[in-house]
Length: 162
Image 1 (cartoon, rainbow, N blue to C red):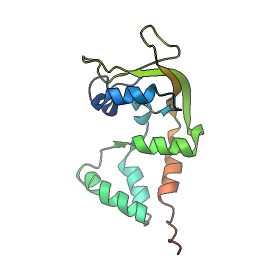
Image 2: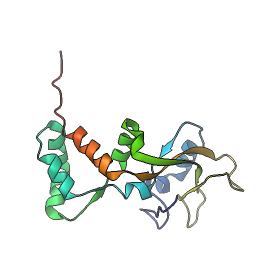
Image 3: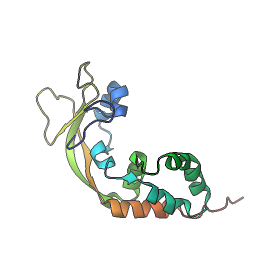
Image 4: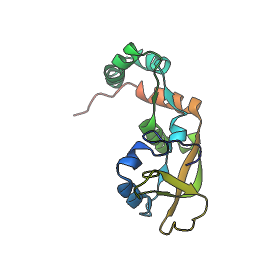
């Protein structure tokens, strides 16, 4: 999709590449889809700076983040992870954080160099029979996104009620 190079092959995103047939079934199903492509995910880099802000607050969630991500940042403090799932979750909480377009999207399930590569356009294309229109994220307001994310994961966890 626009501006999105692959993360598993030069053009294919990992999840589409490992099972493009399943991805195609979902994309063509007609269910409402908000697709978050790699080019948007690459704008949300979880750095040690953000990690340090989060783990400075002690909650069960931040302790889990510290347990899971702390060793990686200790070995490589300059590393940054992409926040794929967090973008998907935050898009449900506050869709205004993302810009979207309505596009027809499909995935190439034919063996060859473009296997697992997503294809999208504002209009259906020749040979694209069966493709469906969906919302595709094109941009992310990272400052607002990370603020909301940090607020949510550093919130105190309420005690269970009985």
